[in-house]
Length: 269
Image (cartoon, rainbow, N blue to C red):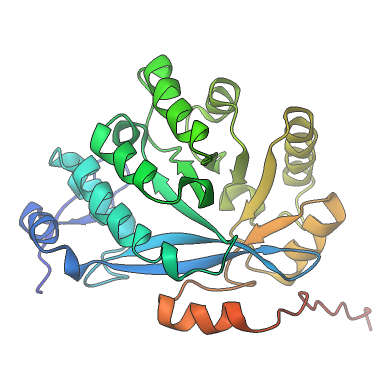
């Protein structure tokens, strides 16, 4: 498949795939691939769950975000999310018993009956449904109604990329999530930035009060991991811990005996 690059997104400046290429994916979803990235227990090294990530032809240029932005501009955003969701759910039966699979869906997609039916037909009790932070929720009562049916089936609800969007706190207050994933913009340089540390501490205290779990996203440096452990963060995700990979590569890793993250701090000489 040859990718044609369309005009740049006026907000982000990202170069987007052409509408024709998005349409080709919608008509031939076998071109889309699913990668899995482990979420790790920071103190134990055990795999807490896996996040399903869509990978498109030509990745990483243009990357997945560009494909979804192009689909949204064409009015096909939920349709492309549905294709990606089907690919993610295909790997669910291959995961070890009790392993949580995270899927990412926008509020608009979750308001579609075909999307909720797909989630309910799967083993919903094994799913963590993360709601994207990058588009507004126009109708919280309707979204809460859709989420109630999923929760009744055992699915957990998460807020993805907390701190990256425009309505993070409102999402948390309105949706009462089971999981809050702190965006990489908060985690990056947390080891040297007291303001970021204070924000992580505040979110830990808040989530402890409301019964939500914190996951730190984008852990890419040893110092960040050490600081997160010191602050009391229990779960993390990022290239320092485990990179996304195809299911064929991830499954043997899941069957191996995990070792706790090893961080060596050398004294100043």
